[in-house]
Amino acid sequence: MNIGEVLVLSASMLAASVPGPPVADDLQLLYLQEAEMEIDPSQLEDYKAAVTEQIEAATRVEPGVLALYAVSEKDNPARVRVFEIYRDAHAYRAHLETVHFKKYKATTEKMVKSLKLVQTTPIVLGAKLR
Amino acid sequence: MNIGEVLVLSASMLAASVPGPPVADDLQLLYLQEAEMEIDPSQLEDYKAAVTEQIEAATRVEPGVLALYAVSEKDNPARVRVFEIYRDAHAYRAHLETVHFKKYKATTEKMVKSLKLVQTTPIVLGAKLR
Figure 1: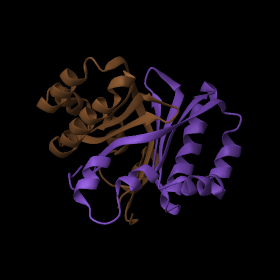
Figure 2 (figure 1 turned 180 degrees about the vertical axis):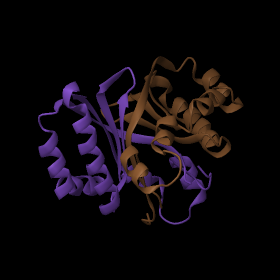
Figure 3 (figure 1 turned 135 degrees about the vertical axis):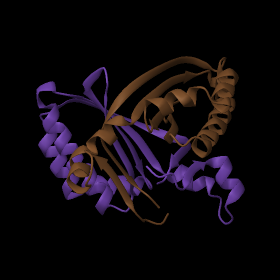
Figure 4 (figure 1 turned 90 degrees about the horizontal axis):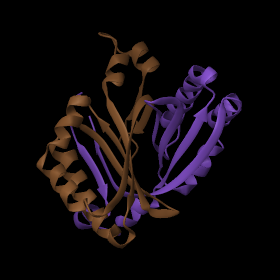
């Protein structure tokens, strides 16, 4: 993987380096949440296929979807987490109304045994862009 | 935020589109974990400053640190999560030995009431690059 640009979003850094309106507000406008799910182990592979299809579509089609990272816990693979970053709350609500998201919800309805959504507030988002 | 490239890493997609050695292995080489912390509420602002300094340094200096996203739970801000992506296990071990990480650990030792590390396996990592 080539190492290129570095993207660090933090309130203090942005406020110090970017002119114009207070960009700390931009960071605070982001809508972040984490989905914590328990998947039926016998349907885990089907679930992975469905969530992959949904995330590929959302990332490609929706301008407000900034990141969707789906992972499973190493010690308990049926426990799946999705770390989600949307441009703002409007983008999140729009995501819920898309064809690909509704298809994903219908497909996985009987695969997901429990779902907890934890809304979060960014402290610092540091990422390397390639 | 300008919408530019889209980066989607998933085993199936990479295997289908990239020639050469099986790149599904590349995705599986990544070292991912999530840190779940309970911070002393009276020291939360100091903790945020320390983790911001650490993440800014790590993202800038360490080639193997791909993403460090620190967030706090909206309904319980003293509960902090860091979603972490390293190029591989070696990069993670190297991160633990850096000056900025050791300084962060020493600074925050009395701020962090509990720490749980959950190692994870990627299913699909979709992100929009600007």
